[in-house]
Image: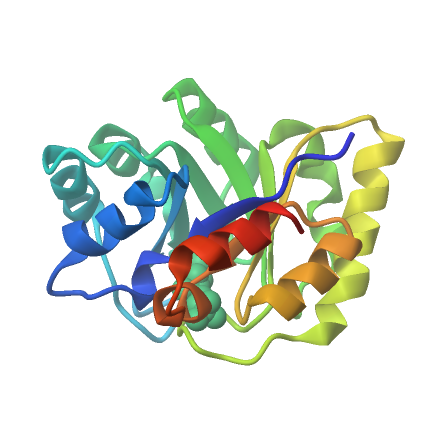
Length: 219
Ligand code: DX5
Ligand code: ZN
């Protein structure tokens, strides 16, 4: 099964003094997803937003699907807070040591979709046992922590592997890519099986965001 291409602009590249306005830029284009990066200064060497940011965006009336990417050493301690704040999908990394399967199950029990994330140096095999229990697999195409980094072409075989398992097992999870995604790298990822495209810098820097989004819809 082939999922339609979906663009998820990343709030990280928006205006941090006007987050509601940056999120609204995405809504007015008719896009459906907003990618929100949560960093703890521990699992990754940077700090960003917390559950209160998500609640505040909801209070300001934003109705986008919040694709919430937790870059936390202990995501299991925070899934309730993010679900209650208004996240729609919560993705957790495979690398830290905690009960991944139980945390994914808890995310779903909280009424959210659940995703598993792999860093560039983590092989696809690390999440093979979990792909029947997720709505999304996120392949990091840069080392997480900062926007504006160069796309890692060596991640393409990992996408192909995950897409192959998805077909073989008749699964329908979304295959998302995050980091250095623009029209060219996004197109290469689409050819390798990706269907969900996080774009921070390329989206917020695009002079014509409507045209940019339309190109992604045709990938
Ligand atoms: C990086 C974050 C990304 C980031 C991507 O750690 O997970 O979501 O916003 O930014 P760009 O698109 O600029 O590479
Ligand atoms: Zn992200």
